[in-house]
Amino acid sequence: MAGSMTSDARSICDRRSVESDRPMNEQDHMSSPQGLPTTTIPPAAIPGLTYVPDYIAPDAATVLLQQIDQQPWDATLRRRVQHYGYRYDYQARTVTSALRAAAFPPWLQNLACRLHQEGFATALPDQGIVNEYLPGQGIAKHIDCIPCFGATILSVSLGSGCEMRLTTPAAKAVASLWLAPGSLLVLCDAARYQWAHGIPARQSDRYAGQRVPRQRRVSLTFRTVLLNEG
Ligand SMILES: O=C(O)CCC(=O)C(=O)O
Image (tube, rainbow, N blue to C red; front, side):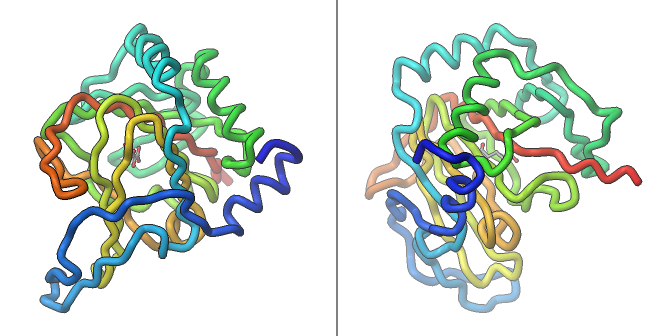
């Protein structure tokens, strides 16, 4: 994966692969809001979705969590967050040059550079969000703002695992992905632009036939900002 950044970065999206995923035990068909049948598909079938287990080693994850917890948290949302590079305005759904946030600390910059050098990020990410999820907390399903952010969205999971659900906007298809601690998720192509992703707000998930209680999960989302300010 190491080597020329640009060509490798293209190849990760072009390969349209999921290196490893384990669909959760679910019924094949559920009901969409329109009452139409909804098909459950494996995440591997979503073009542009790449899942890399064990991207961060457990020791490195522990150090990262310590470094994260030394930074101030923004507690104005339902879950605590830290914004780096740029702040995303959740109400206005915009990012502008006026929304510059703290510079990436070295531990975040190192990870952003690694993602870029290894070809997972097409461009060097300049926006980072740290999300903290306590048991019972999640994130509503969404497609990351298309005019605000570039073609690749990356998310690193630390702490607890959890289920991510991916849905097509018409809710005709749903995919369920287990985000294991230390894993990396890369969304580009259809996975980034046509599928919404979200984390159900729950105390536990059903995974591999077992009910798994949630613990504290911290994720690092990396994006590149597109400033369209005329
Ligand atoms: O926690 C995650 O893995 C996803 C975070 C996310 O979707 C976001 O920050 O927009």
